[in-house]
Image (cartoon, rainbow, N blue to C red; front, top):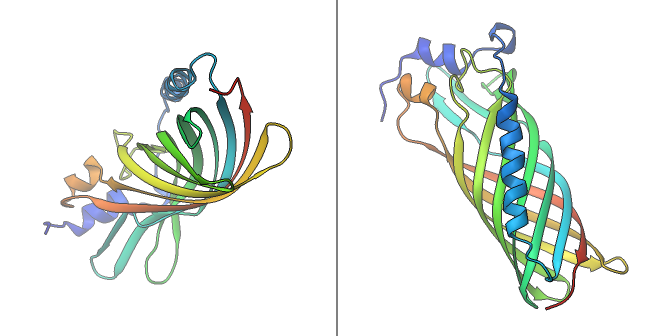
Length: 231
């Protein structure tokens, strides 16, 4: 499947934090992501429509980004992480709504050999998406999403993220149980799943062919407020 050069793989993908040089980060990249999310949100909320604004938080667990065996089996994956998010949605009929969401989390990237865990960098994960929600019962809804997962490492030099910020297309689905908490406010408890592919230039350089399918699972709590007028 690939022609592995073990020293290269260990150097670029397995280097511990103490041996990785810090890279200068570009503040404009983060600002651009926030501006893009704000622009998408404004498009999703036409005037004189019923709009739902949501704040959400929860825990996300991610499967392996890299997995292989050179001498002993190893994998590279993210620690479970807390995420924060915001979403804005407009109703297109009583049961359906379309909108945009934006979530962010930070997690340590770990190598997991058979005997120990070694931390070797930290990532900020940005997650913008377009959503379609279907309320199939008064107390429950399902949400479909399409967007991107953006891996933004604190350190780039001599890591598997050298010279790039991977942006991977993502598709997901979620389920929420919803309860009114008075007036125009609702609270929801839900679960979500999404999937994307993962690869980097550094991995391909050292012989990894193809991409890893990465699965993410989340439990989330949402507080939602409805504003505007009903259609």
